[in-house]
Image (tube, rainbow, N blue to C red; front, top):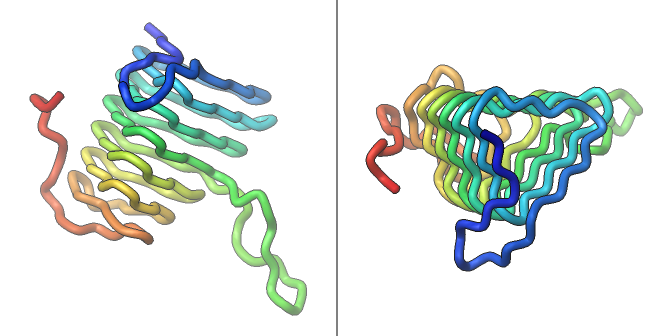
Length: 167
């Protein structure tokens, strides 16, 4: 049901997997995490993988709050999911600015191509495709079944999803 460190991408070494868990990792069904993955879950944080989650190689997750993946999510190589900025910001007059950490929520049937960066507060609705080398940093709802691309990422086209027959 849960397979960790799978070697399935020939251009990457078979490096196993690294897990640092000081919080809670929840598996709600089948989960395949590829070789070279690094998962870091901080104290009190919750990382959830729903059924039929699959990542290829070198995925990195830094979870200090909450990261939730929906069902049937596919992650290409070298994607990074971070729900924290690690450092607090403030205005020059000493007032707090922004949040250090915000949850990330990935909907059902989403596909992330290679080398994407997903930052705190990102919400990806159901059925979306995220193009390579995109930086996601906001709530993309209500744009379900859309192509998301760019840095920072924008909705490029609606009515798009992954072909269920593709390999």
